Image (cartoon, rainbow, N blue to C red; front, side, top):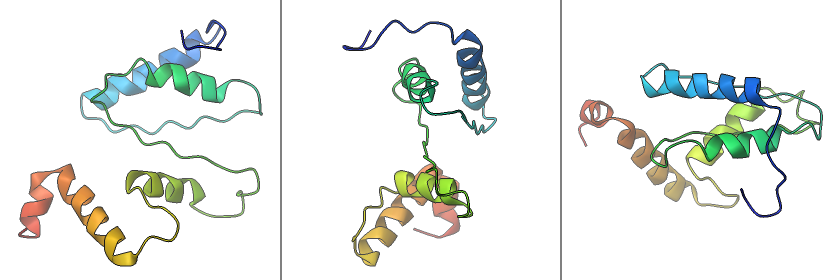
Amino acid sequence: MARGLTRFVGRENSMAALMEAYEKAKIGTGQVVGMVGEAGVGKSRLLFEFKHRLPQEFGYLEGHCIHYGGAMPYLPILDLLRSYFEIREGEREMVLRKRMKERIFGLDSIIADLFLI
């Protein structure tokens, strides 16, 4: 148990749903899980516990919503992409393009072969 955290109890159904999505992703069926709830219900703690059950080599993307972002289409997707490509405010476009290209081509050698790199 991590320091400062209480015992994790009462979220068996939620954890089972996350683990089921993980098992499907592991065999190649891509998964997206949305987690919605009022502040303080334990969304962050559930995600914390779930991530610590995953093998280290398993990759996942995490995006966040903001309470005033409901009118901004695709805001969670933009957050996922910023996270995946490690985009930080103020970075030069040339650096971003290079990083994005490396990450995309690193997903699968077939993609790189299509673009002859």
